[in-house]
Amino acid sequence: MFLALLIAAQTYGPQHLPPVIDAEDPLVDAAGLVPGLIVDLAYATADNIAGRALYPPDAKCLLRRSVAQRLAIAADALRKRGLRLVARDCTRPADSQRALWKAHPHAGAVADPSRGSLHARGVAVDLELADLAGAPVELPTKFDAFGPDAAADAPLPDGPAKEHREALKTAMHAAGFRVNPSEWWHYSRLYGWRWPVAESP
Image 1 (cartoon, rainbow, N blue to C red):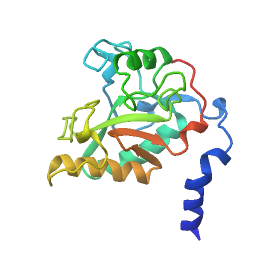
Image 2 (image 1 turned 135 degrees about the vertical axis):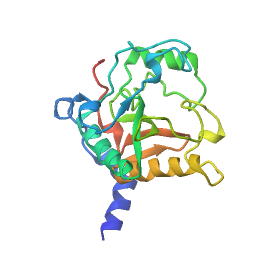
Image 3 (image 1 turned 90 degrees about the vertical axis):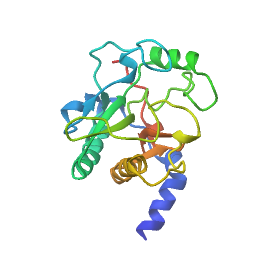
Image 4 (image 1 turned 180 degrees about the vertical axis):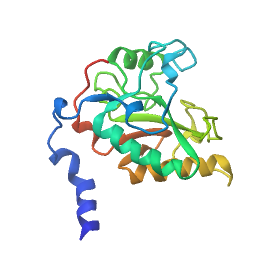
């Protein structure tokens, strides 16, 4: 019965679920809720697809409170495997979304800013992994490395990169997130379009 209800919810859910009221799920600093979270925002430096910093150097990882709470569940599961979450992008202001769209307007690579992305709603987070000491671990590709190898289910030889990608996927799915099929690092809350576009942090 539970499985049937789950399948029905996934099939019919988004259009039948009510929108989330902004004040009921505000943006919070995820670092205060997610144990061991390393915040290393790619767009706070010039080393990104836009070629320039889009955020101030002290930018925080802001997420909807419910999203940060679920991320904490994933972080706890990964810690038991000797891993920590590294946040590469969190809530993305509208002007930054427009800059990314202008820099990389290829179909599917960056969400059309006119629609408002899941990042703009505060319900998506881009993640890498580190060991418990904070050192990066091997992963399939660099963050924002668009191409077939970046797909969430891209074939990989057995080894650390595959092991880490699958560990991240398992922990995030169990915590209530879905992965972007084209980007192994991009996770969003189920039915994320129910949330309104967040006020620019």
